[in-house]
Length: 72
Image (cartoon, rainbow, N blue to C red; front, side):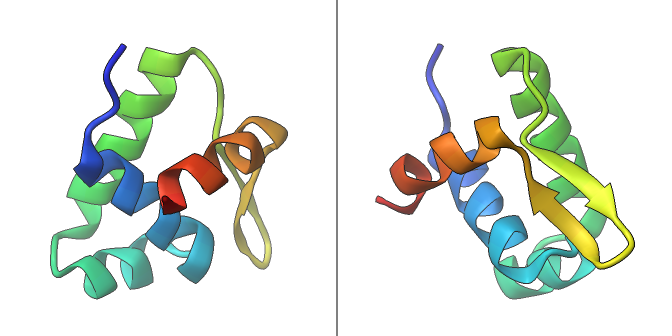
C-alpha cells in the first residue's frame, strides 16, 4: 500500500481545518475531490480516519496515528 503525497496533504489539511470546504479551499481543489480522496484512503486502509461532529471533522484514533507521518 503506497500512500500518495496528495492524500497525505489532504489528511493534514482536513485535520487542521476540520472542514472539507475549508481544507479544499486551502489546497485549491474542490470539496468533492477532498471528500473522495479521504474516502478512498479510508477504504484502502480499512479504517475511518475522521468522524463528523457538531463542531467539525475530528480525527479518530487511527487518524491521530497517521497524522505525524502525514505531516512529515
